[in-house]
Length: 122
Length: 140
Image (cartoon, rainbow over all chains, first blue to last red; front, side, top):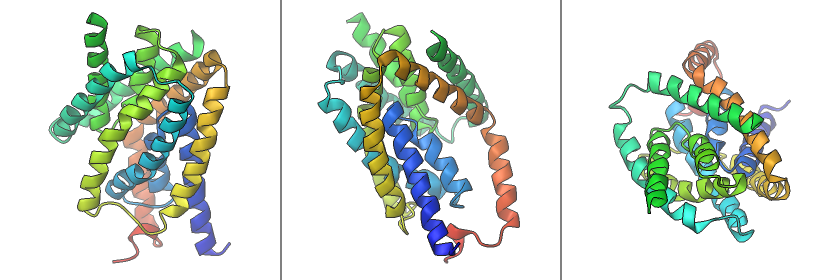
């Protein structure tokens, strides 16, 4: 296949998978698009992380609007947890690079596995 | 009031992880459904909305530092927009308990990748070294 066309096809596949997952699961797009960009599109990791946001932000806006319009946003829960996410996000960004991420990543993976199994089975 | 504070705390713990680039939503959504009996779809809605301000600020910083690859990016964004529309409508149409199970499966798969992410990154770097035609780094 023509390289130009193949490139665009890979990009479209990357976008389609990311959009579908992010919309259906209400998040997680970053965990799909970053590996796809580095592995399939050969982007450098730092660039992939930054570019991922440029993809995920617009699609999250679209999904958030749809969820919101169908009345799925509960303010009594959304407001406090939203405040927490923003405050925590600032702390997390500050911690980035100051804390060894290696073990945190592993611990996080185990917590995710437990939460995943619990959601899957119960 | 206690519930309010606990929700702030749960949001903050997810926010810290998100700020460190580890997918805070993967933890916020199950915490909300398990600890606060929030419906799966509502937890997803909250995660989507909470992501927007953080991502907006980060993106502006990345743009200023010229870290965003703009070449051909619309070939990624346009299909992503169409599919996110479809995905969202599907999530709303599907039964809540089923959506939760799908989400659980998604988390299990992601957790495995997350656990081995350093090994996967090593592999990718090895592959890159052996490859000559690296698309996004070929231009000076």
